[in-house]
Length: 136
Image (cartoon, rainbow, N blue to C red; front, side):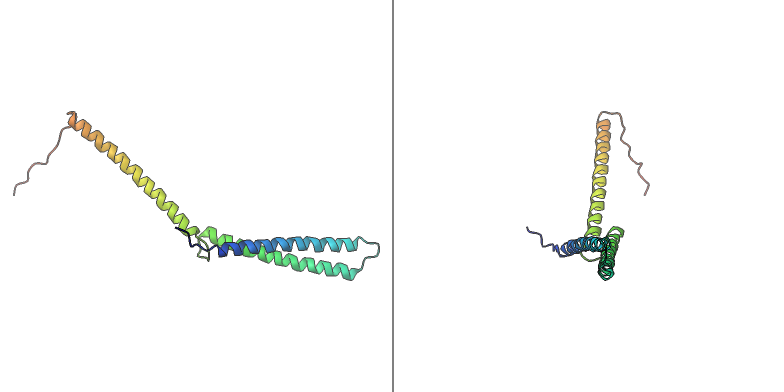
């Protein structure tokens, strides 16, 4: 049976991260252009200022994008409800599986005790006890 799970939110997250990566590259390029202009014998300050302004604006976009990603990750790890995550359900499933394995293990131990008791009873090492009859 094919899964009908949508990967939209995951793709959106990856797209946002790719945009941040592109902005980082642009910021580095703007910083480089500003430094290149300033290293000239006769720098044109207007060009250097323009590259510096572009660098700062791009850096602010990077910061905002990273803060959004960090906020999302904090929501995921703290179990707050958020769109597109199955973290809470996966954690619940994992805990249920652990509880189920514990119950199976405990039932196996009880079955071994029961078998041991029955073996001892049949060999005569354990007497069968019955409750005295109660007067009516």
